[in-house]
Length: 108
Length: 113
Image (cartoon, rainbow over all chains, first blue to last red; front, side):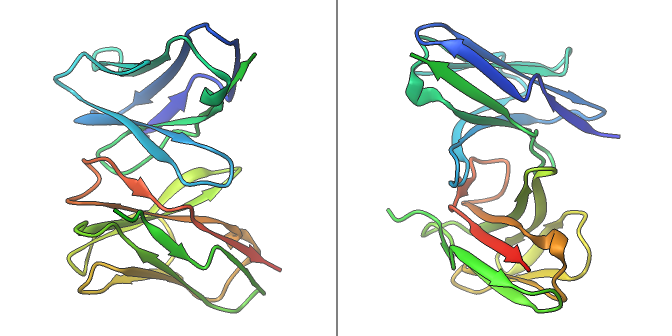
């Protein structure tokens, strides 16, 4: 069956470090993959979309990679700040499914 | 421009009742999707509407239904409420569909007593 797995439920890092979140999917081949950020009590906010023919995409301190051979996407936040603390969701989407999310905490 | 608006923000119902939730998408967006979010199951897709037609459907029972109006506003209805229907219901809109960035509202928190 099709599965989406995000590497860990929670990730704690120190301010200024790079956070790396992983999204793995199995048994399907999405044409694109999206990353969202969700704060408590709020709806998800779109961050980045990467297509299957793109290896990497950047936006300010954010970088996403998409490896269709490994069936994996990596999401990096460089120079992390406490304000980056949130839950990050991946959606390797052909059918509007989301991963369970990784709760990132950046400590000052 | 204004974001996605969902009403009401909070709702308390009892088992067996029915409920209707409303979503106003971003102006110009024709696709509206609905999701259920619970701590145990995460974000699960309910259905997507495009130009007043249901285009995609998730794996939920028939008690969950929706519709979209000509102005792209959408409603979802849940009949014969069960305790397990307690969740955050999120609506998302985009111009053409889920292959584009989805703009989410802040949801309706539904509690079933």
